[in-house]
Length: 252
Image (cartoon, rainbow, N blue to C red; front, side, top):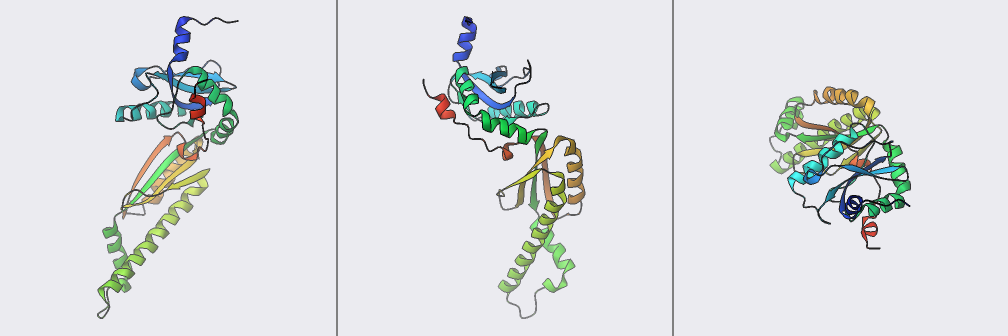
């Protein structure tokens, strides 16, 4: 029977902030600072390793500093390891509860790691400059001009329909051009009036440069839009693992 030192027992009893889960990889330990400057370490169980750091209590305030630190840790890990990321604010009351969580969720976590192996998430947001696009359409399609007897409301309706058709065609072209270089895509609802498209792509690490080059090639033809290309990120948009943290956090 192994006797734990007081320091080990104290550490196990502290609340543990969870960043994500990787495969157990020999004796690898991250050389990273987590929330509040606490070192990030691994808790290993059943071939999996949870990335955690000690926190003072069961809740972490979602300040900008904390959110950025969570992001920095996961980004650093995903550069070298396949990671199942965990949502910000996930806290377990002890190391044993972390181990319990890994045991309970071992099958879906292992499956997710296999699905994400060697892949990262890239993001592409598209914003439309409606006035610029409308001017282009009016130049390209003289028939969009308002007729002498056409009611203004009817003319505006025709312009809006033409604008919708154009943006749909442009976005379909982006999808078709990028799809061959991605393993999967996830489209979230656009945010704000100007955003037309909010997409995430699951891309093999070996194809990231090619994917970025394809994005640059495609968007160069679309001067009435603004694009925000981000990543590589941990694959948050492609993880479908329900971690029963409440059960694992319950008192024995």
